[in-house]
Length: 307
Length: 204
Image 1: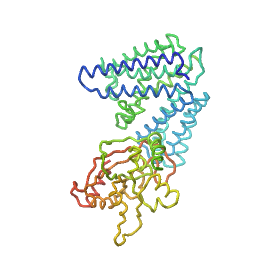
Image 2: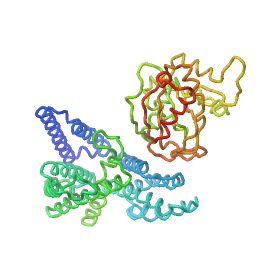
Image 3: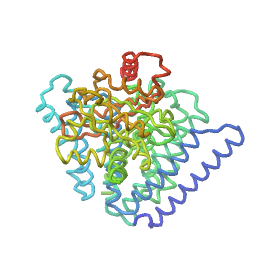
Image 4: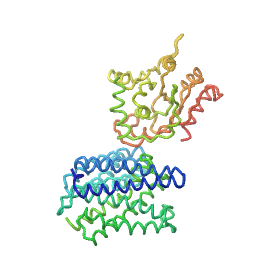
C-alpha cells in the first residue's frame, strides 16, 4: 500500500491542508463580499472529491491504479470522440482506439518498455488506416483516420506514461508512486497557480485568440511558484536541486502547452468545456489537458536521468 | 422486481460509466404527476438512456411503448422486454377492429397513472436522422388533453449502437429535456399538434 509510505502520506497531508485553506478563503470571500461564489465553491468541492478518488484509486494497490488510469483514458477518449465530428463509417476505428487502452496499460503494468512505447505510434497507427481501407469509404479518409490517431495519442499514449512511471522500480528509497504524486500534484497545482496569478495581476494576454483568460503574468507567476514547489517537494523524487528546477520548468511549460492545445480542440468544435461531468471544472478532458503534455515529458526526463 | 435489479445493476452502471450520458434540462421533468415522454428513436440504447434518468424506485412506473411484432418475435426477447424493461406492447400490423383501438393498452396504462415513453417515429431510423412522426401520439394527446408531453431529444445513441449493427462503440449520449406541453394549451388540431412535437426534434 503506497499510501502508507511516509513521504506520500505527508504529501497528502499537505494537500489536504491546502484544500482546507482554500475552503476557508472561499468562505471568507462569501462573507466579505456577500456573493455566493458558486463556481469557486463547486470547484473547491470537486477538488476534494477528485483528490479522495485519486488517493484511493492510485495509492492502495498497483493493479487498481492501472485500472484507474485506464478508466481515466477511457473517459477522456470518450469525451473527445463525442466532442469532435465523427461519421458512422469511423465507428470501427474508434472501437480499436478504445481496445488499445487495455493493451497499453497492460504493457505499462508488466513494464515491457519497447512495446509500451511503440504499441500505439507504430502498431495502432499502421493498423487504423488499414482497417479504414477495408471499409472502403474514400471520402475524408485522411482527416478521419488522423482524428482518431491524435485522440489516442493524447488521451491514451500520453496518460499511460503516468502508469508506467508508477510501476518503475525504486531508486534508493524513491518509488514510482512517489514520482507519480509529484507529477500530478505539481501539474494540477501549476494549473491553479496560472489561474490565480492571472486573476491577481494578469494584464497582458499571452494568446488572445485561443485562451483570452491566459496572461503573461499568470504564466510567469506560475513558473516561479511551480519551480519553487518542485524544489520543496523534491523529497518525492531522486532529483538534485538543479534537476528539480528542470522538472518544475518542464511541468510548468508542458502544462501550459497541454492546456492550450486541448483548448484548440474545444475552440475548433466551438465549446467551452468538454462536458459537465465534474461540477465547476467541466469534463475529464478539461482536468487532464495539462497532463497530456507533462506526463510523457516528465517521464522521459526521469527515464533519461535515472534509468 | 427483475426490472429493479436489472436497472440498478446493469442499466445504471452501464449507461453512466461505459456509455455516459450528459443531461440538459432535468428541471423540466414534471414531478408527482404522470406524463408521456416522446423521444427520437435511433437505437436500442434510447430506452436505457431515458430510464437511467430515474431513481430505481421510480423506474418501475416508467414504461416504454414498443412494437410487439418486433419485441415478441422470439421468447428470450419477449421475456426480456416484459420482465426487465417492462414494455407496453402495441401491434403495429393489426388493423382497426370494431369496438377496439390499437392504442387501447396505452390508454389503459395512462389511466393507471403510468409514465410512458413513446417513440413517435414508430421504429428506429437511420442513425442520427429523424423520420416523420406517426399520428398515434396525436390521438393519445387528444384523448388526454391535459396530460403533459415531454420532448426528450437524444443525440449520439444512434452512433453508439445503430440499427442492424451489433458492435457497440461508446459515445456520450446527449439528452436534452424540453419544456412539457399539453394538447389543451397548444390550441391546435391533432395533425398540427404532431407537427409541433416534431419541430422540437428538427431544430436540433
